[in-house]
Amino acid sequence: MNLRAELEQRVSAALQASGVDAPAQVAPAARPEFGDYQANGIMGAAKRAGMKPRALAEAVVSAAQLDDLASKVEIAGPGFINIHLRPDYLASMLSSEQPLVEPTSTPDRVVIDYSSVNLAKEMHVGHLRSTIIGDALALLLEALGHEVIRQNHVGDWGTQFGMLLAFLEEKGEDSEQLADLEKFYVAAKKRFDQDADFADRARSKVVLLQGGDPDSKRLWQRFIAVSIAHCNEIYQRLGVTLRDEHIMPESAYNADLSVVIEELRQQGLLSEDQGAQCVFLDAFKGRDDKPLPVIVQKSDGGYLYATTDLAALRYRVQKLGANRILVVVGAEQSLHFQQVFAVGRAAGYADDETRLEHITFGNMLGPDGKKFSTRAGGVMKLSDLLDEAEQRATGLVAEKNPDMDAAECREVARVVGLGALKYADLSKNRTSNYVFDWDQMLSFEGNTAPYLQYAYTRIRSLLRRGGIDPDKLQGQPVLTEPAEVALALRLARLQEVLEQAAADAMPSHLCTYLYELASAYMSFYEQCPVLSADAKVRDSRLLLCRRTMQTLKQGLDVLGIETIERM
Image 1 (cartoon, rainbow, N blue to C red):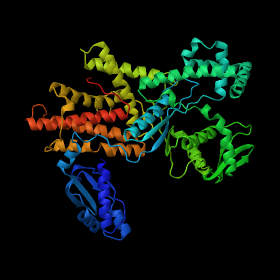
Image 2 (cartoon, rainbow, N blue to C red):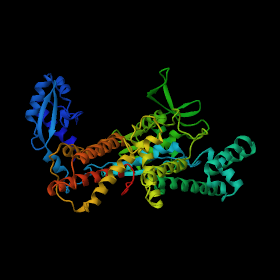
Image 3 (cartoon, rainbow, N blue to C red):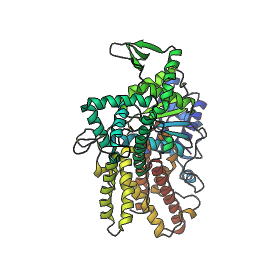
């Protein structure tokens, strides 16, 4: 159950009963003395209704039906309402019969466009944020019962592929150089820049490819297959859920581009400007207050990213039936997607009920405050970054567990290293830049994946020491100690946190929650003996331990991060 939503519904009903038609605003209290939740929209509602805030708060408290879940409801200051929850009510939410997460009764059909690599090159660190943020959002929405359609909008078309095909033709389809796509691309680009004849052949290859020439298409498919294999290796190592069937490349929309242009023309949206076909919308203006053009066809008849993205929007709504579309692309593309979404709505590709969201994210920075790169200043391959994560984690795990055998050490290091890398990104506000710091992300203290994974393994260890089968623990806990109540309150908030993270498309909400939950468990563990307690107390606390273990695993699973039995 979404506890916050339940409280807002009840307080809203009390506001209406008090003669004020306004939605309640309820949030977790900032400090324990304020209670567990606080209704903080009373003053604004009172002002709109021409009432004194405290008088309205008193009326709401009197009318609110909260006795079954609140032990105390009190007014603070000019009109805040503090709600203290009943321990037995919290305990009922944590019964072994209660599911961790309840699926929504109104599922969305959500298309998520993420990763979106350029198949001309090997994946590098610049692809990390889109890939893991998008995958976490897909898993989060699925956990809540929404239907998710993954779309990997890969780049597989255009001039650069003519250059690569010409080079592949020279080297042979089975060239060993294809084992390193980055080096292959750099070598092809060098030839293109320095050899005019080669550049002419490359341009002719583009024309042949886009014209359907069988030999050119066969070479192109060979290169694409190798590139996708590289991507799949990275996806598998990262533990993301993208598969071949989720690939929807730019080339798939090739036949639709002329259709988009014709439909924009029929809608009266096209204007010619210096030979190019453009859409001008009043919402987008330059410094001179003149509308900015959204160019959808160049003067030579060629198409642009805006055209392809409009075709993709059209396909996702009309063919896939999406009512929510998330495009996980860096913040530098904000204006582009604002324009594409606006043109798409104007063209009738999406109505006002269809949510179109550009899920922006900032840059991953090095210690110097610049974009993360290799020591030589080049863009680091993503495979190299994953290798380093595992290598660094191996040293830490071996140091903490000198008796662990080599095979287990490697597996634990893999889980810890990759989990740390992903969590360091997901735990940050995705709209901000963040500084990449190995020491911080691999720390066993603070808001890190190793800290959460360690909290999980401590509970598994406790259950093993006690010979406890967690599946046989039944009933609900009895909450008497403050540390028990504090832990139960955190556990009871899982549903609301997941729903808020899904609504805001912010995995960081879940990360913050998991860190606070793990911290609450550590305090509980220190203050409340479990295995040495009397039988009834022991069983009650074991239920809290099991619920915490399940919640940590569920949360980390949603983030795409593995757990292990010991570390």
